[in-house]
Length: 320
Ligand SMILES: [Fe+2]
Image (cartoon, rainbow, N blue to C red; front, side, top):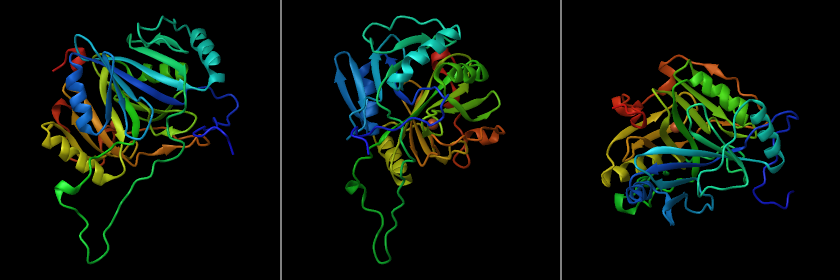
């Protein structure tokens, strides 16, 4: 037994080196009040922190995301967590790979180090608690016994509360080069891909099927953040609640092939998305996942409605 609650022992692979978690995503948007309304309506615990917003999940202390104000919506940076003993080794490996370290942006000083990805998106690696799950998250299917009603009336359903951040998907000009970059720098491993269209990467110390995903575009950008909920019913309820509040655009209900999760995406105020997700595949730290290269028809979904045309528009890159 460990005296450190929440501590998860690292992978037992002696020579493996990599981050353990996507610690936080940070977006810049023109109006933080709009973001507060959107993410609060989504069921997240959104707190003011000076000029920024801290995005948390109810009952969890971790800050999964931040929103700062900027001229236009943009992915500001991604922050990854590692074990303390791995930080100097990761730093040395990244520098040995020819990646230039840079100063942190103002207001984001930390115990870690910073570098740009090949498309100039900032990446931070810092020492932080492991917040990627230690095991597969449980999903619920509650069936009413005979003689009872399974569905309560609308007003009696409690709000949907996401349990944690699962992953983010970002745009890139070159999926293949990005996969190699994140393998080399962060020690992430490829879970599955579909050619140069999309790729999914996991952490070596045990994580969801993907904590970072990459999709081909004309430039860098933020596509979606994905939030784990308790079951398919919560996905539907969340989507309905968002619809009732005017956030009517999105895609779902459906099920992915790569990662296997059930989903509904709600389009955010800036043309990217927030995803309700449940039952995503989990890759234990003891296991090597057989990364596959899948046909394009398997890259999006197993079942669900047609993909809306705007789903892959990268407004940060000036598309649309
Ligand atoms: Fe997703």
